[in-house]
Image (cartoon, rainbow, N blue to C red; front, side, top):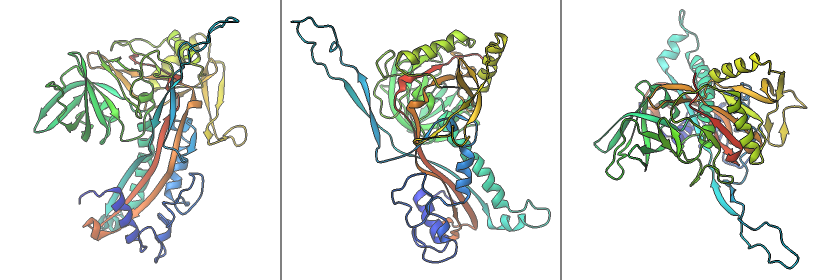
Amino acid sequence: MSNTNLGEFLAQAQRSMGGGAFGRTSGPLSGYLFGPDFFRKQTYLQIADTFVATYGKKVWDSLNNKTVAFNAIKKVDWGPTVGWRNRTDRGDGRSRPVTEVGALPTIDNSNYVGVFSYPRQIVTTFGVSLKGQAVSALEGGIGNQFAVEQEAASRDHIKEINHELMAGGAFRINNAVTGAGITTWTIIPAAVVSNFNIGDTVNWYDLAPAHRVSNVAITAINVAAGTFVTADATVGGQVPAVGDIVYIASRNGITSLPDIAMQDLVGVGGGQASVLAYNYAARAAGAYNAGALVSYNAGVGRDLTLPLVDSCFQAIRMTGGEPKLIICGLDQYDRLNQLLQAQQRFVDVTDYIVGAGDERTYPGTRGGFQLATYRGIPILPDPDAPASVSAAGVALGTEFMVLDTDYHEVAVMYPTQYVENRDYFAANALVLRGMFITMMEHRCLRPDTMAKLADLNI
């Protein structure tokens, strides 16, 4: 049975439930899927035909009640816009003292860069055979096999969304083989290949040295082997090799927090990377409202220290932001805990407030969660935090990020929907299929209000 595309899957689902294309012409179940008003503009907070009390709502509620990075970012309706503008230059020399009869400062306008952002579709599918569904209900079976798979897929969908939000964007190449019009990349260590997705486009850094703008899209991934496949990545007669760095040029999925917390020419794994986000052309270190503060260590592991953490706070405040949340892996959370407990610096826990549009979870309904703090800044440990890689290709500790959440939001086009498909003729097989789909994107309105520490020891 071959895979189908998203549009055809939805059309098959409507046909299999007795309704017309996005309509409800017959059958008792045709209306609980995507109703006739699915494509009509509406806000994500509305309860309409597309968001009824079904499994999609269950997944959405579950996702927003987990102590992970996704839950800590405010949710907003997508709205009528596809982007925003970033002010990248204040206008040099237009502000200065002037004597009574002195000349006025030279007029120099600010520079603005348009940022384009589009919703990303995250899909999780599952299915069982008709025979398997029937047999599983017999004595000794697991019961409703379709329901069991549905529950497992809902957990996978939640995991995928948060994993995409936390995906790292640059890693060391262990090997790359080019031939027959394709390049097979091997990433070291193998586990970090999960930070890439099919449809992502990548560039690479040649230790020659030079950045090779290949913009090749990933067409296949083997997580167990640590490999992915693209079109031929040869640039200027050069091909990727051991020790080079591959990095994200554009995401097919959600733009991640580590993608935003980058600068141009950052030293990663003994090489360099210029991870891109949205349509940013350049994020030079130290430029006004350009890149985030990023602290790597040339691919050499180092211990997390309080001065390193304090430097993140200082960098964000220097740009006019205010640190409001620390996100790190479980290893760095334990290390920070050891540092602070030894100095009796854990003063208390705090209520972390999550935003939904103009609403806040506390005061009002206590819908946030409690986190430990350092200098009053909540610390959120996330198991999906990406690891750094040393210049020798060894996995180091996870990255440590500090952000001003005022400038981060998850814009939601459609919250999680659930669709069933029982069109045997379209599938050309006797199977029951289901799908969870969510449409959203992470927006960062000011990347310079983020800071990141990498190349940390476990």
